[in-house]
Length: 336
Image (cartoon, rainbow, N blue to C red; front, side, top):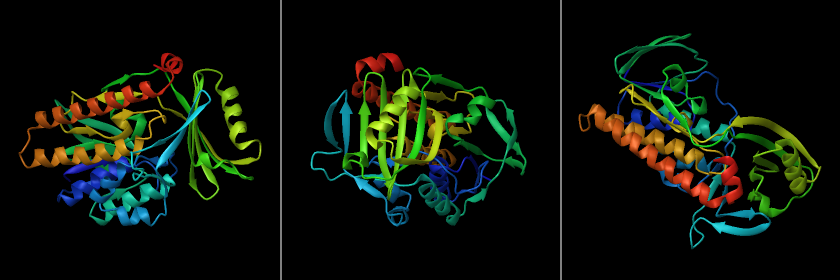
């Protein structure tokens, strides 16, 4: 085995697709069975060329995603419509994540990736600057490189004591899927509301089902109830209700030269950034690119790690600065 990938979400599957294309032996494991539920259905238009690169464009289009070229943003009662580009041609995507993730996973498997689900990691074996093997309930795995795509829990960060810095206060975001029983405003197809006390994001992800992400600096239950009643009245059914820690975090791996972290395992944004999936796919593709160049002796392991960490740092810092500029100063001071 050349590569072991832990986690079969968009980041892990994107890595698997690119590495399988490059001819590597890839095994991908996950602790759950697929398809499985995940939030995060809105995708920035920047994802489109990546879907072509992964050769999944036709499969994603077949999902019949909802496309949108703008977001209605309400900041303390003042509304504006923000388009992604000046001629209004760029379009984002909204779709159920479980279907999108399955498209990527099936492409990886088709290209030769071996996928083993319901795999629980028991122990990491390390030696100097390398992870040698991983012991699981499905057997032991040995590899040249390992990719951590375990999401915001960032398994290797915890188990191997990597540096994972937090750049915000603790942010707990609520996530809902809501089915209104009466007509709602069209702007809720893609709507972002920001006040000095909370933010809420609403998007239509499929017929009559809206995704809602919400977070507040204080009195979360009070403001959340106010937000939902304001836009859906009391006439709706809650299909899904979850809570997630969405604090801003960035991992730095200076310990193991055959380990790459991707997606939320590498860096976590809160849902005010619509670039969560974009970041996951970009990091998956880029980690595969770096590993390929190391295996071909174009880069040394040290050079590869340096390039990858610099990219991650720059991506994270740019997104964090962008969010701070967008949010009201009052909420920035309470959040960061």
